[in-house]
Length: 430
Image (cartoon, rainbow, N blue to C red):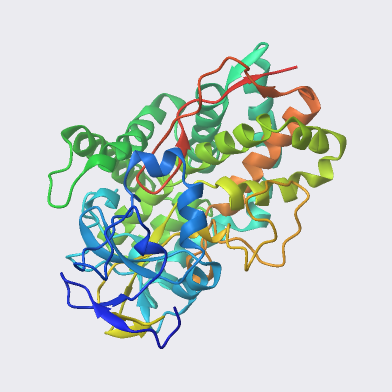
């Protein structure tokens, strides 16, 4: 389909439907016959279990009308289209309309979120935290992260379950301990909150949030606000100190300070642990790739980017047209949810050669979009890369025979709605 394709109209919103395309596959209800929207399983376990067939189909054509979680939407998966959604701020907004049907990704219980702001507010909020997450600042943590990884690996024997014995403990000790200075005995407050976000995955439109999530969110809120209040009379150039200075000076409101505080305390726990787990799962399943890393550890930075492209933490995001638009032959009303499936964009053959092949030696002409792009690039990306690099350096040195446990059950995937998190990764260490 091209920009001049015949426009059909969404039976629910009255907006344009494509005449043909990947969404009109045989297994789905054809939009041209009865005008039923095909269902895309972005919110369903089957999608996390095996997303590659969906990626292959979606990147084969332009954006299309569909239904996700019972709500009409547009799905965009090709690399160029996802990049447009991240960069065309004059057309697409990050601010969620009240009718977006995205309760299951409201991880902050209705509070505002920096991720769902546009300029100039986004730049103002991000500038409070950005100085604490520059590569130079983060690299000063390298020795401490190396020591933590060594300590955790010293405690394992011939086998390891990566998520519980390495990835999650490391994420907590780096993010909560090293970066935020939280006493280890208090880690549980934010670990429970992070874990409770998974409960939103089964939340249907209009359904109440689970009580366990509400309680965990309230406990995290109380702890975080108390930590900020304790710092109000103290200056400092650490991350909490910068947040306190911004609150005191009026650069951010109390509500915005609260949102940024929650972003700091919980934003990187699950996603960073997921990245470590996915990396070791992909490499453990490919002994040839692991041998390449062990033989030449200068490939580790490339391997990290390949993991992010092939099986990063995040699956999708969303944008909303600021006005009624026509895009790729679709007539899209203002406020429609447009899913940016950045995980699929890494498999676009127009952007990557042989995209379904995992190769730690890959040198691509295109930067993957796994951690966002432009002004909405992931704030904590340098921390995530440092942690994964340190884990891979230590494991390639210690365990040249690392591989999946032969009799281990297949990996199942869960996590927050927008992430593909392995529940357990069992490896042999030798």
